Image (cartoon, rainbow, N blue to C red; front, side):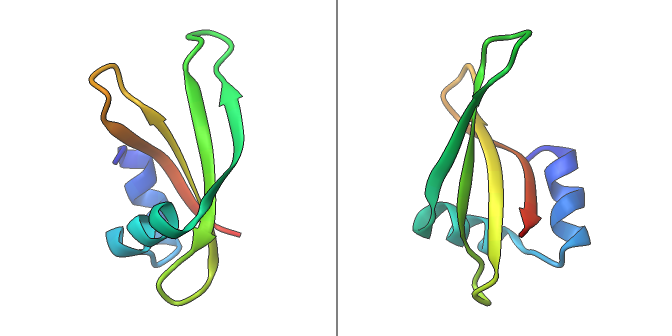
Length: 74
């Protein structure tokens, strides 16, 4: 989790369990390539534990770990 993602989670009253639920039950709705680095990031849309629609923006790090860039409720 980036600091930005943690701040956005707190702002939307989301927990790490909500983020996990979105990723596990949602689907990739968009793939975007960074113009400068060429890295791909993925927008995963799904439901929080409470059933609200949310998006997790994530990428794979160079060590193949999933990094959550930001999270927001739609």
